[in-house]
Figure (tube, one colour):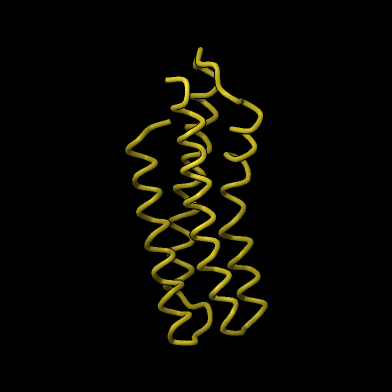
Length: 120
């Protein structure tokens, strides 16, 4: 995996989490800032998906390919799904779930990096 792309995705994930935390503290619902942050994060996650698939197919490394691709394919689904839930459930806790999804994305990225670099 490209380390610079992973760092950019992690920074976008942190910003997404900060926006969600601000909404949680202010007890507000989904607005344009949150949608913009999830849109940017989603574009970066899709780029990570494409890069991960290409690098995974081109490498001669011995890595856990099925698990790696499962994480890689699931990762872009998390933020839009959670924001859709937050749009439907207009309570304070919907932002808590959005904030938790930022943590999930960060953990997924860390695990992807561990799997990729384990046999480097």
